[in-house]
Length: 114
Image (cartoon, rainbow, N blue to C red; front, side, top):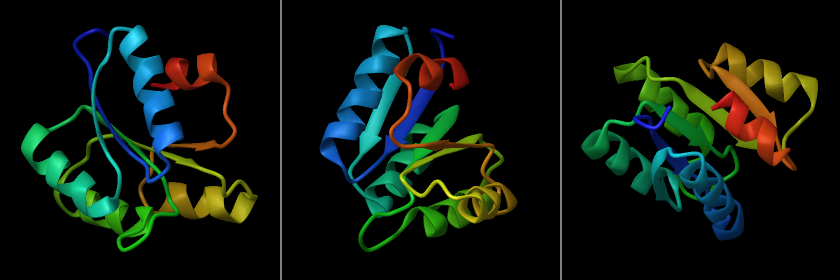
C-alpha cells in the first residue's frame, strides 16, 4: 500500500488535513485539493490511484467532479460526505463511485477502505 497515490478533494480544511494525515501515517502518498476545480487539475497532472471526494463543495460539486473523472478514467473514487441517507449512497454508487463513506467516519475504517 505504500506505493499508493491518493488524491483527497474536500473543501473542509480540517477534514481534508485529517484524511491526509491518516493516510500519510499509513504510508500512503497523498495530494489534496480544496475544491473540485483544483481537484480535477491535480487529478490530470498527478494521476492518483484513488480519489477521495467530498460531495458538497462550492462551484464544482463532487457529483460533477465524479462525472468528469468517469468520462476519462476508471480510477477508484471514494465519496466521503455528510450526506448519508440511502438514496444519496445509491446515487453515488450508481454515478460511478466505488465506495461511499459517511461523515463522521471511523479513522481506522477509512484507512482500511483505502
